[in-house]
Amino acid sequence: STRKKIALIGAGNIGGELAALCARKELGDIVLFDIPAKADFAKGKALDLEQNSSVIGYDAKITGTSDWKDCAGADVVIITAGIPRKPGQSRDDLVATNLPIIRSVAAGVKEHCPDAFVIVISNPLDAMVYELKRATGLPRERVVGMAGVLDSARFQLFLAREANVSIKDVRAMVLGGHGDDMVPVLSATTINGVAATELIAREKLDAIIARTRTGGGEIVKLMGTSAYYAPASAAVAMAEAFLLDQKRLLPSAVYLDGEYGYKDLFMGVPVIIGGRGVEKILEIKLTDDEKAMLAKSAKSVQGITDVVKATPAT
Ligand code: APR
Image (cartoon, rainbow, N blue to C red; front, side, top):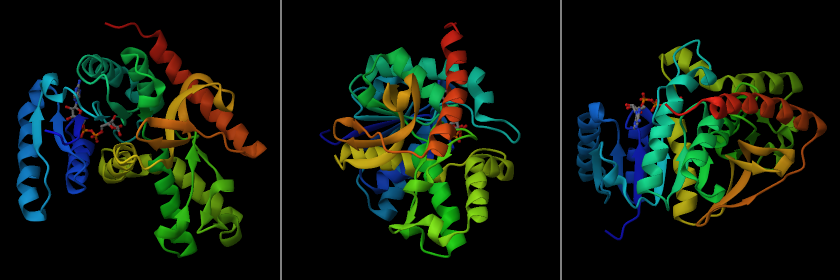
């Protein structure tokens, strides 16, 4: 096929929604990959989504598999393999379970999808995407973590509700690690260009920032598992930016090599995503306060990344 190929590694809640979105947007043919024990589950989901194409009207071939060969030559790989949080857990609590999973996925990507643009969603995000890049040896232009678009979306929703304005007019940016000390950048947060600080009182903003930081946990507590609609949309926005060479400015976890003063670490910063992958890392001006928050977040990310680095392959 001359269509683009999108391999979704993990056919669970986020994987399924990723497939549904990519299909509706006709971004390419879709492979839903999962472990052998869930191969039939992946096949069933794929069949359901293909039948859905007949109702909705989209052209996409969707297949389920547990064979890496079926992922060969993918243009985009989106990784959700791993277990999600349960109530009371932090993202970092997932590292022991998800590290061996990401390592096995990295081996598959390295062998079968060496030319793909890879988007990691599995948590703890910054450490998992670090390991994916380390284990595959892919260039940093081709490996990103999805967190900032989702965290910014949560921030934007709470701002829109508070200001009683359309969600379409709220632009915000959340940087740093995908943890409770993520950094909502108020200096880059506007309601169609009007500073959010002009429209929303400081105490309200502080409460919104606090809610954003625990926005994932709030849903885990309600549902017993983690969110999947917004995480899937966020990753698809990144995939689409690559596939359609949109050159979008999106906060993404990327490998830092001195930018913002951090080295050998994945963390969320504003980047341009286009047809060559991460085409540019933007070093925007941050206030002293924001720099301090970023340093705190980086410290947490470094801590969990060090755990990953110190864990030998089994
Ligand atoms: N290869 C491929 N898939 C795997 C592997 C593996 N080695 N190990 C586990 N999986 C699959 C599981 O079988 C499951 O179907 O990953 C899927 C994960 O799906 P869900 O349990 O529904 O989890 P989901 O909500 O999609 O979240 C996945 O994303 O946001 C993060 O914290 C979340 O780490 C979690 C991940």
